[in-house]
Each structure stands twice: as structure tokens, then as C-alpha cells.
Length: 229
Figure 1 (tube, helix red, strand yellow):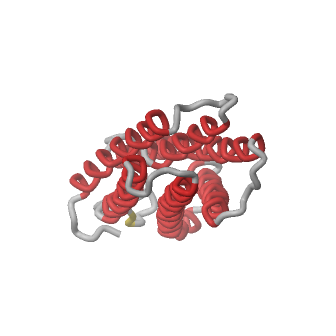
Figure 2 (cartoon, one colour; figure 1 turned 135 degrees about the vertical axis):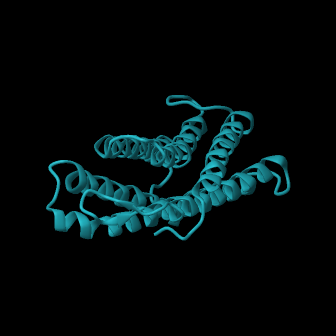
Figure 3 (cartoon, helix red, strand yellow; figure 1 turned 135 degrees about the horizontal axis):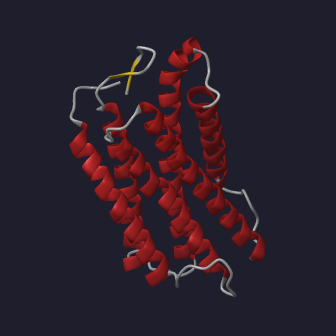
């Protein structure tokens, strides 16, 4: 899937955008929304922790996965690192979604009424399927050589699809939350609105640079002679 570009500049920008995005969301939650909490009389603090957990799952762990591409390690160890990092991202995503349900239930708000929430559930289900399939086929107990070689390009493509869908879902989340806030009195051209919109742009750019980094990986021969990223 390589397209003749050097991956390192794209990866560096993706790492930078991940840090910037995580910081911006933390500033938003603490400076504008009052902080983070798991239990609090102010239920909005619970929802703030949902924002940050989801963002960490999307930004930080995906960036570390890009880093693992450059590690000079045995293939089995790189697979283990890949699985563990994705597992952590999956767990954070599940906790984040649980936090959203917790906030809604404790605030007497309906669940799963928006496109953002539907896509969010879809993303976490697809992500879980992707992880389980990768574990069983490529790690343990491992599929037959033919199944592995035929599955690999589809596994990569499906992973890209799920990640792009996750970035799109997060962007919809920014839009949905900001719309609610503006309907509740937050200034449409105020500093908070600009911060949220700018964070959404950073999220989209991060997704773009992750995609470019993966596409620009040089072909690598796996243990079955199959050329893949």
C-alpha cells in the first residue's frame, strides 16, 4: 500500500497533532467546563471525563501504534505490542462509552438518540471485532498460512476504515456538544466555541496524517512472503 512517500514527516506531524489535540480537550474540560470527575453532584463533570477518555483513545494510543511501526524488534514482539496498544485503546473506548451512559442515566437524559451515539456504538463494536479477529488469526492460536496471507490486506483496510469512522464520529461529537452549549447560552463567536471548532480541525488533520503515514509505509515481507505495510 506504499505510495512512494516518506512516512517519517507524516508520523511526526501526527504525533504533534495528537499532543496538541489532547491538550486542547484538557483545557476545554478544565478551564471552560469545570473539570473532570467520575462521581460528582455536577453531572457535567462526569461527561467531561467521557470526552477526555475518548480523545486519549483516539489520539495518544493510535500515535503510539505508529511509533511501533519503526521499532526494530522481532515480528512476534511487534505483534504483541500492536495487540496490547489496541487493547488499551479499546478498553478506554469502552470505558468512555460507559461514562456517557452513566452521565445520561444519572441526568435523566435519553440514550442513543443521535447519529453521533449510533456511530460511536458502531465504532466500538467494529473495533472489538477487528481486535478479536487479529488476535485469533495473526497471534493465537493463529490461522492457516493461506487464511493469514489472504486476510492481511483486508485486516489493514478494515482497520483504516474503523479509524477513519472513529475520527468522523469524534468530529460529530464536537459539533453536537457545541450545538447544545450554544443553545444553552455559550457565545457562538466566543473563545470556547473557537476552541472546540479548532480542536475538531486538529482531530481531522490528525486522522489525515495517520492515514498518510500508513499509506507511505514501505512494503514489508511477512513470514509468508506476503508484501504488506
